[in-house]
Image (tube, rainbow, N blue to C red; front, side, top):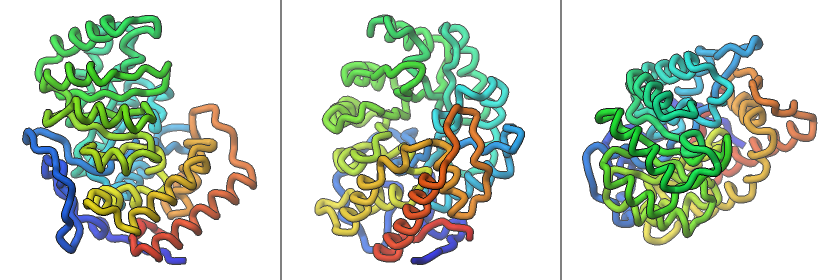
Length: 348
């Protein structure tokens, strides 16, 4: 086992180059063809869905959040999704959503996106989108299941998109197929329509269907819209088919592996090391999903982040068996890191 402490820029040299090939590793990779496009594209790569640390009184722990930002940066992230599902956005007040987003923007050099739809009316969402945009984010993310009711048609959803587009000037936008309050997916044809507006930069796909993701990537084409896969078992497939990157909850356990897949996994021939890293991700998919987000915070503490494992969600407490599995996962991750020579951002 190894415990590698990483300098702030020690893993991957960070650059805000607005293209899908913004991260390279030594040795001159022969990458699959990259999507050409417009300068305003967000960087491709790993975009973590950020956690919200809390104090023992369940207030936002801003010193802990600062450590978390540094950890994401040290692990090779190319952007940050703040105020998302993993951030417990539905458990935050409106002011907390704004304060948290602004803090992230002001404490990182990476581009940041944040959710802006929490109302059941277009007007309510439009007002909050403008407030989120004022924090300095690169794009404000829209949640389809917050924009319209479950019974609404695709035409109703498109009308809501049109209202928001028409009343938010030139604010850059994103889309997150959040499973709550209900799971509403965007069809590939709607992706095609929305990308043509030249306003959308970020799309977090949660279809969990590799073929569907590939179709959306095709529909996005060479537009500014990047498709970021949330389903960790399929992320290697999607980035090899032109996907913009990765935004999955497993990145709150081992973000370095997803940065590694992005950097190494787009070669024409899949390297053995990439296969092993991806196999590790597949093998542990159920472990990381159990009692999330509490389990993720426990795992972060194994890595030295020194956070409480508190949550505002009704997530059960971790029992001894849960902790044993997470302890074993940490040991296995260190062994994999040593074998594949993937540095881990660890502060213990």
